[in-house]
Length: 295
Ligand code: GUN
Image: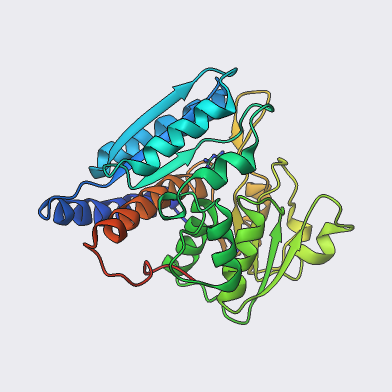
């Protein structure tokens, strides 16, 4: 078996074309969705991600602004900026790029963002809403993008065995919850899991977000499984790879996402999706029900 490649770049482009149309329709009603990104310090990966976010906003017609602070900025200054942006009606969505320097408490910063503008879905209110399956929250962008890729590719979720490798707050935990709400049987593995392969071999859908290149080899994958690789690792030779041995596993899986060009482009796209949704909710210009992808 050779797996079908799930082309995240192409699917993300199609979603962005739809979003462009929505943004145009909002413009006709006098609304331009706006996203603010707060960045602290000089983390090189953050610079790349923030650049991609700004570019995607420009492409779709969403207003975006970056608020940069030096590494030694006080927590108080960041909180003041968040308060200003909470009160700014042009800004419908706000994110604080992670990681933050150690002297700034991540939880304090994330809890300061108005839940209605928390388009990353990291505020405790949105996290709690995800746990209980509330459909008015903003789902975090990376797992939301994975869910979209599965649904777009007509991969059934209900009743299937899902194994998520990685239990982070940003990807693994919310991913497990989202697919649980879609009525999958979900296992979440993590760094202390013994004999990882015993779990992964049972997966009909395997989502890997561990940050370890080459972690998933063909012997760990069931024939015909759907394999979603969320890892992004830079090898010493400069090559960008995921957590899955792509060439080996593609001979066994039914579907697989490449790195780059799989989940990555969807993460940025879902951020814009959430921002457009936030603008609609805040201005009363949209369907007040959940975004169509929410669990
Ligand atoms: N750092 C790594 N991924 C993310 C993300 O999805 N959102 C934010 N704000 N920071 C990140």
